[in-house]
Length: 172
Image (tube, rainbow, N blue to C red):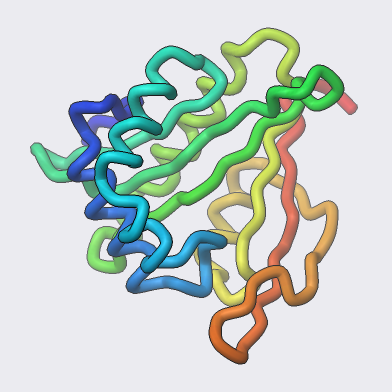
């Protein structure tokens, strides 16, 4: 398995796995399948192209042979008072690929990238409470809970709570 930062050349495979994530696990993401489909692949390519020039905003992909089998976004806050923080977003591994260390490898790549950025002190993420496997992965890599957001996401008439987690890169 190879984990690397995605580029504009990866737009199509990234768009396809992102759509699958939103279709198969809509409760786990803030974006919807319809929103990403409407934005189109051109928007995805543009986002990856922009990220190629901004070191604090990258998307990681895990490849097995030539297939993209997992993704995780990483974004550093831009505002001066928030630049000590970053977020992991959109992490997804297809169901049939889970349990093979892909999520762990993606998370470790994001943490290593974060550790290389000057003055970055913490990485935040949120995970829906129903996604117990992801939550356990985050805890195993040192993330700690700092809150619960009730009704964070609403899918049709059903609400999903999110656990807010942080990983400290420097001593508190």
